[in-house]
Image (cartoon, rainbow, N blue to C red; front, side, top):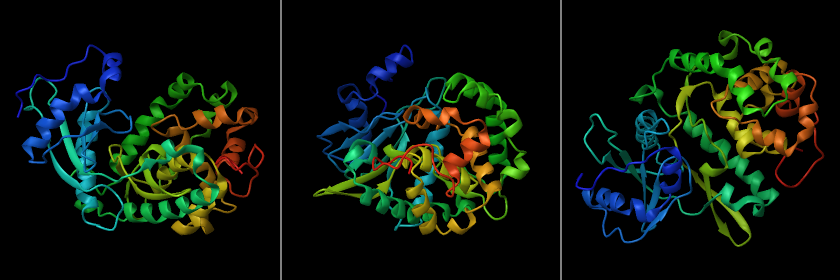
Length: 347
């Protein structure tokens, strides 16, 4: 299976120029398809750009190879494990695992693991963009509430990677906390006076995590690129979710951060509909502790989820304090800092 020389890149920039290049990767995709008898493998197209090479084969299969540049040693077993859990719920709208393996034997050099899944046809919400109507976005919020209820109900005790213990999630949060201040100073999404308040604003992990029940299987990066849907005339209808490479077991509140800031674009109307359909809206109102926990998870998040908020709504930089910013983002009863809009942002 490993008759073709390994993919090699001089640096991250070199990799970035080639990781969506179908001509470069076609021999490796052919190698995978032939090994698993997924032939004829005649039409190979790049999938939506992420961090790993993904290619759609004949409109039927998605071949994803994992680079060592971006935590591939962890995301491959995590995503493989996630798809095995997803197979326990055939109703969950996510790709089905077809095959997996490595291009090369494990050793001193990167072995290039891969997975092959079925394809969810259509365009991502990010690709569809502002053509998606307000009504369709409200339907999407309800759809995602039902999908995430199913994801969070996956049996963590059956996982080979994610343990039914809060220890791993606590260790992850502790690591995030150690680097939190430096990350926000590097990202520069928040103004200096709010960054200076972070250390005092963060609460102990024992107060942050809701460790009654759970932990729950989390997608952890459900943004606009990871929800696919199809156009039916002028309607965009969601079809499923993809990319479980960042999944982990933990607190469901952490899940809602990428969802609200990255996918809903801080639209509280969509958040409210999602919470109603998910079944937790009654816990959200007049709950200052919950809002603070959510803002803590926002600050501790693995990704810079605040960049688009401050870029699209510079007025949030005028917030005098993190509690004020937290209310603007998370408190359904607090007016947001921008006028109501139909473009899918705050309302």
